[in-house]
Image (tube, rainbow, N blue to C red; front, side):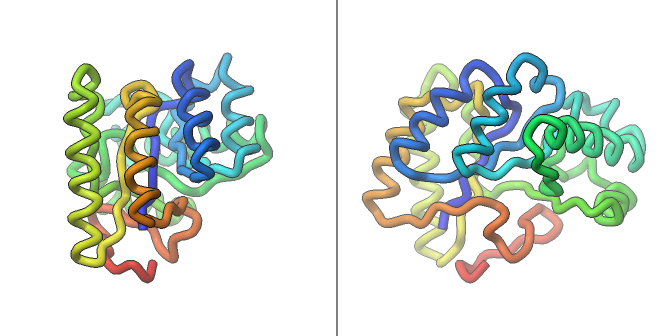
Length: 206
């Protein structure tokens, strides 16, 4: 099983990724950055209309601002949650914190998020697409290699990508190969429980 996730949208690159996903009839999870919503409302609505899952990725993506206290982190997630709800009518409780939960999400931060009703997600396949933005061939190869390795151990793959860094061509290439190999694509709302660095699960039954 493969959970495709995209961070930092919506932006001008998101529609072409949506075109590719539509062509392969694959659903993904988009972790939305609050500061990117204005001017991209139609793209956000399209994500919902085409059956993808919406997650929250903070308002600012600023490490110092977001992690200043458990409450500042919760407040940012509530703010982006409300913005998305006002536009789409979807009230998401699925979150991915900036830069991942380790090491910044202290026990107090995690407890505050849980109390606020949020489900936190990290990843176990990092495409490093931001690093390989100009070397997409390496990114594609390494990503598929990691996904295949997880399958060999009966592990699901939660794949981290970014709207602005994974090209439509790379996404199409990976989907072409993985669909041919009969991988099952799921969204985070189809999992029994969230996957994060403090709560890792490996089996394919989730």
